[in-house]
Each structure stands twice: as C-alpha cells, then as structure tokens.
Amino acid sequence: MQHYDLILRNADIATVGDRYVADIGVRDGRISAIAQQLDGSAAREIDAAGRLVTPGGVDGHCHFDQPTSDGSRFSDDFFTGTRSAACGGTTTVLPFAAQQKGGSIQDAVDDYHRRADDKAVIDYAFHLIVADATKDVTQRELPALIEKGYTSFKIYMTYEDLKLDDRQIIEVLAVARRQGAMTMIHAENSDCIAWLTEQLLDAGLTAPRHHGSSRPMAVEREATHRAIALAELIDTPILIVHVSGREAVEQIHWARGRGLPIFAETCPQYLFLSAEDLGIDPDDPMHGARCICSPPPRDKANQQFIWNALASGLFTVFSSDHAPFDIHGADGKRVAGDDASFDRIPNGIPGVETRMPLLMSEGVLAGRIDVHRFVELTATNPARMYGLYPKKGTIAVGGDADFVVWDVFEPGHEKVIANDMLHHAADYTPYEGMRLRAWPGITVSRGRVVWRDGVFSAEPGSGQFQPCLRPRTPNAGSPLDKWL
Ligand code: DUC
Ligand code: ZN
Ligand code: ZN
Image (cartoon, rainbow, N blue to C red; front, side):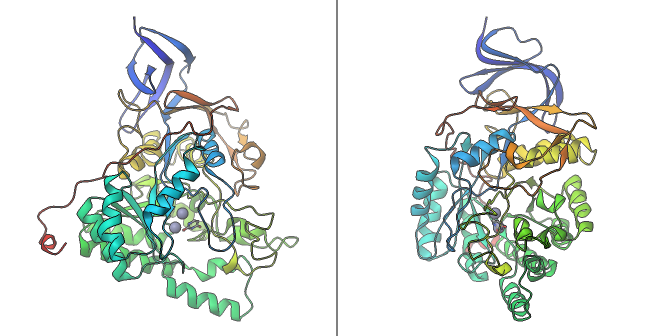
C-alpha cells in the first residue's frame, strides 16, 4: 500500500480543462497520485468533502520590500507579503528585482535574494526591472541572468527613475527575442503625464483625486499602441501589465486581430475601484491617497469593460500589483507630508491576499466567469507566461502540491473584508467592508498546510526560489534574424 505525506480526500478539483471529484496524494511536496478513492495511507488526511479545490494561485505581479527613491518604504517585506499571499490562496509570487539607474542588474538580484531567501513562506521567482538598458546590460547581464532562471523583465515607459525611451525599449525587446524571454511593459506616456501634472499643480489642483486627471486614458492608450508597434517591429511577444481601461483594451484587441502575440494583465483595482475612490473625505484630505496607483482606477462604467475583457479571453493574467504603502505614519503615502500634492504620493495599493477571493466571489460565484477561466487567469496562465508551468499553476501528477480548498458562503452569510483579518503589514485595505461569498479555507504549498481555518503556519524561509524556464523558444526564420 502506498504511503503519502498528505491525502486530500473528495476534492472537487477544477483545472483549466477539467472538473472532477478525486483524492490527491502528496509525497515530497509533489502530487504523486490523483484517483477516486485513492488506496493508501498518509501522515495527514484532510477530507475536502466535495469542496471546490483549485490550483494554488500564481501572482505574477507584486512588490515586496523593493528599494524606493523617495524615502518611502513598502509596508511588506518577504515574510509579511508571502504570508498574506498564502492566506489568500496564492502559493507562488513573482516580485521584482529592480535595477537602479547606473547600477547592475546582478547586484539588484543579489540584494533581492538577501531580502527574500530567509523570509519567504511560499515559493517565489523574480522578474527583473530594467531601468538602464546599457550595452553591458543588454549584451552581457540579461543573457546571463536569463540563463540562470530570471526569464522575464519589466520595463517602464514612465517614472523618471525607471523609464526607457523607445530606442532603449527596442534594445530590450531585441534581447528578449534572441533569448526567448518575456518583456512586461508599463505603458503610460511619460511626457504627457509630466505636462498635465505641471498644469494641474500650477492651477492649484493638488489633491489626490487629481492623480487621475494627470494620467487620463489617452496617456495609457498611446503608450499601449506604441508598445505594440515596437513589439511588432522586433517580432517578439510582450505582456502589457496592469491594463486599466477600455481604450487600452481596444488597442490590445486590435493587435490580437492582426495576429500579434500581445498578452495583457489586469488587476482587482480596475474591477472594484473607480476614480471616485480617489476623492476627498472632508475630514481627511489624504483619504483618496489610499487608492492612488498607476494607471489610476477609471470611471465606474469602465469596470464592466474590464469584466467583459476578462470573460472574453482578452486578458491573459489577473495579478494583484500589490504595492503597499501605509496611509498613516511618515514613510508611506504621507512621506512628503500630510498635504502633499498628488504627484508626491507613492503609487500602489495592497491586494495580494484579496486577489483570489475577490475574483472567485465576484467573478465565479456571481456568474461573470466560469471556474476554469478563474484558474487560467489566477494560476495556469501566469505559470505559463513566466516559465513555471507545469510545476506550478495546475493540479497534475508530478507537479508541486500547491492548491486551495475554498469556503463558500451562502448569500446573507458573506465574509466581510476588514483590514485586521488580513495578514499583510499595510494599515489599510481599499476593499474594507466588501462582502465576499468565497474565501480560501485551506492553502497547501508544496504539500505543507500553510493556512487552515483561520490559522497561518509556516516558517520564514520555508518558501523556495523557483528558477524560471524560458516561456517560449527563440524566434527562428524571420528576416530580422540577420540583424538580431
Ligand atoms: N504602479 C506601478 O507601476 N507599480 C507599483 C504600483 C503602481 O501603482
Ligand atoms: Zn507598473
Ligand atoms: Zn507594479
């Protein structure tokens, strides 16, 4: 008789392609058998009793303990950030090792490992941020890092200390093409934002809500179109991150129609927040700062547009873009003071723990998407895009034993989100008071029960770094090959 470390019995398993009830046998952190009435014993058995079980989430976009240039500090380090992820059903995270302008990417990676390796409680891989696309970076550092398992990088079209110009973007895309890596692009037009910001500040319009006016949809639409054109020119796939609105969606739809491999990500803030959330509370001028992120949440009508694009398959991945800054205290949103103008307020909101339950509740249980699409967006596709599939991102024999057993609540008995039930270190959640019909009851990460019935249990440093494979093979046979 086979012996397992863990058997999950009577699981209602959902993957991208299948749904069936079976037992899952786990040995040495991997799924070693899936069968109806699995014959065997285990050190630990859990009866899922027909509850829905989905692959552990892969959050392809989150920020923990990332160095900043304005004196602010991300609320979460790798311990609190990954703890929060685990309690929200995520078992793999991909934060960013960010190159400083003038610095080396390898140094950024070494520094980030020092921040992560003793602290993470679930598995993690790193994207790179390329802030300075020098010859040394594109010809030596990036190819060497890709070889070592850092196979995706983010580039910015805005933010003074991060942005690349079109020529530099082309150089990075050419490396991605040669090496078979994935380029993620933050698409907003930097000069438009700078000009609009100057006009707003000159007119005395400095409150948090004007953040939205400084980055209207046209700014994102133009940069999205340009990113698509540059990727088309170099003949390489890209993934456009945190797509916020209908006008950027239209550009991606257009590109797909031309057969271009343009992938896209959206995030909970564009489904559940709107420009109104940047507004002023008469008693607290900084209230709207809680929801300052870039691109900003759009008008309410836009939310339906994003839902439609999630359901239709236009979006490839659904990530949190968890970027937490405290609303109280001097090193978070208020780093430039209690009445700082919108352009001096750190961008980003917390959301790594609420990503999966928000989409399960408001997407699947509300009938907007089916459970297979949920799995695809939250786990399988991010694992595929970033070279972690099928070790991560599905429930299959041979893959890591990463899964979530869901609690589902009847209408009238929903779970009400409150910041003090979350496990991040941020002092607020923008989703306070939302009533959800689903929440992870159990999270299993590489066979370890890290979250069960409200109790978190995992040691700092028990998460493992995951080198990523190349998400695709290098292009071959294009006329561009003689130059690239
Ligand atoms: N925008 C980003 O590009 N990164 C972090 C947070 C944000 O709002
Ligand atoms: Zn970004
Ligand atoms: Zn981000």
